Image 1 (cartoon, rainbow over the protein chains, first blue to last red):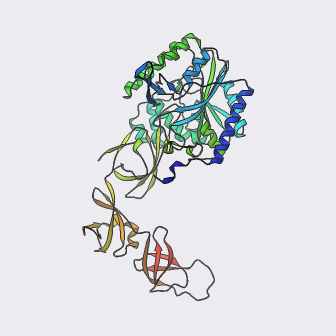
Image 2: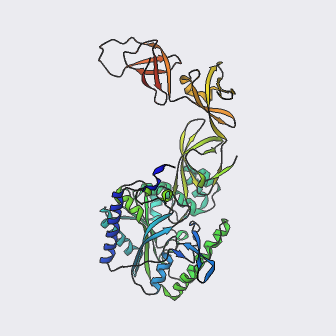
Image 3: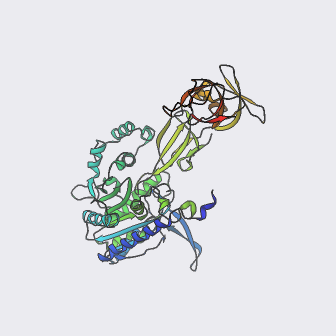
Length: 324
Length: 188
C-alpha cells in the first residue's frame, strides 16, 4: 500500500466537472417539474434479487436496545414507489446505493445513482426522456433502440425467446465459454453471459443504445407486455461499452410482485443463498395502489466517466473503496 | 492445494487451468445491474507462456497451483540439463530444455536467474534483466560509415544475436537487455 492513499483517487478538475453535471441534472428535472426526494439509505428490509448482495448493520438506541437489523439499500426503488403510492407525483433522487461484492473498473461497492419515476409514462415515453437527458449532459447523438430479441438475432444469430438450453450451451461453447456452459443449467445465466461478453461491446458505440423488451424471465420489477407476455417492459441503456441505465414499465400488481419475491427466494434456496425477508411495507404500498408509471435508475459515476472520458470509476469519485 | 474463488483472484495468483499452472495477470468484474456477475481474467500459461482471456462465473472456484519463484545462480549445462544453485543453501536444481526454452541464450555462469518451480520442478527460467556477454562474431565496422543507423548483427558467446553499433568489435563485452534483445553499451 503506497503512502499517498490519503489523496483522492480522482483529479480535482474531474470533481468540478462532476459537480457541473449534477447541477445540469437537477436543472433538467426542475424544468420538467419533477420533484427531488431523499429516501433512507438504511432500510429495515432488503431485496430478494439473487444477484444482489447487501451490506447489513444494526441500529442500537432508544426503543432498540438489542439492535434493529438494517440494510444499506441497493437502490431506492421500494422507498420511492412508496412515495408514488402516497401521491408524490413525478419524483427523482440522486443518492448513494450500496452493493456488496461489486468492485472493478465499472463498479464501486458504494456508488451514486439517479433514479426517477414518471406516472402515466410507458417505457417508451420514459426512454424518450432519457434520450433528452443524455443529449443534455453528454451532447451525444440521439439514442438508438433495438429489442432484446432482435439484438440477439443480429449479433449471435439465435432467438433468445425460443432457444432451448442445449442449443444455447452449444452456442456458448462456440464462443469459447465451454467451462461455464458445460455445467450451467440456467438459461438466463447463459443469455446474460452472451449479452455481457458478445453483445454489449458491439452496441451503442457511436450513439447510446436502448435494448428493450427483455425476456419475461428477466423482468425483475417490470410488467409483462400485454401484447407479448414472453417479454417484459424492461429496458437497458448502453453507451461505449458501459451499462448506463435500467428501467421498467413498473409492475403495480401486489399479488404478482409477491409471487416474484417468493420465486426469488425459492431460487435463493436452490443456489444455497440465504432467503431474504420480503419488504412488507413496499408490498403494502402496492396493495394501497401504485399509479401506473415507468421508472429508471442511471449510474451517475458511469455518466461522469463518459462525460470526462475516464476508463475507471475510481477516476470520477473522490475516494474509491481502496481509499475510503 | 487450496481452491480460490473468483473473489480471491488478483494479479500474481497462480491457478490450475486445463492441467497447466497459470498466473493471473488481470481480473475484471463484468456484472449487469440485473443478473449474473462474471470475471474476465487475463491469464499467462506458465509452461507455454501463452497469454489468454478466460471468463468465469463469479463465485466459482478453481484449484490453486503450487508455483513458486526462487532465485538461483546458473552453474553449467551437461547438454541435457541446465544446473542452478541456491547460493545460500548450495542446493542444486536441474532444469530441462523445455523449462529453459529460448532463454538458454542469456544464461551466463554465476548470474542469478529466477527459476519458477511447479510442484518442486522447474518449469521456467527467467534470466536477469541485463546480462554481459562477449561478442564472438560480427562484421568489422567501417569508421565513418554513415549509411544506415541500424547497426549490424553481432553473435555473442552464448549464440544470442543482437544488433550493435558499427564501432563495436569482436572480443568486446557488451551489456544486453534480455527483455527486449537490445544492446545497452560496451562493458569496460
